[in-house]
Image 1 (cartoon, rainbow, N blue to C red):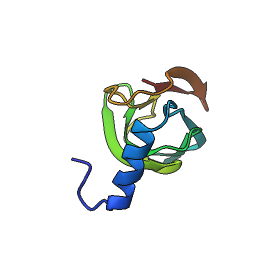
Image 2 (image 1 turned 135 degrees about the horizontal axis):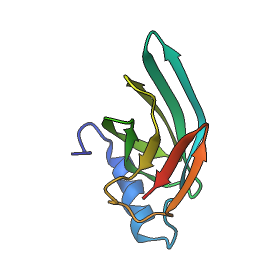
Image 3 (image 1 turned 180 degrees about the horizontal axis):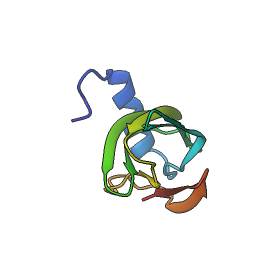
Image 4 (image 1 turned 45 degrees about the vertical axis):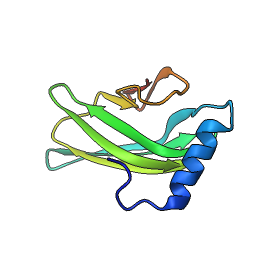
Amino acid sequence: MFSRGLAVKTWTGFFREGFYTAKVPDYGVKNLTLEEKSGKYFLSFDIVDENNFTMPLEVEVKSSSKRLIKRVWVDETARVEFELDEKPIEIILDPNEWMVNENKEYTTEGIKITVE
């Protein structure tokens, strides 16, 4: 699912971090912007890992009636962009709780951020 087109070097770092350190990813959202143009919402933000892991991450954005999920590679940081029909109300990092990470909740720019 994540391996298509990924370099061996990327996977090597992923396994080294996962097996040879006691740290876990510590994700956060920074540089969030939300623009409304012609009835569409354009959401962009950076995902930052304070512990500098390199690994895939699912990102879910919820509005009042829809949810969208993207998979991104976080290599210390990753830029994420969504185009939405409705104003987003929540961003969830790792919504299916596949990764061991620091769990937290906070709000930025009026949008709830959840790290599962």
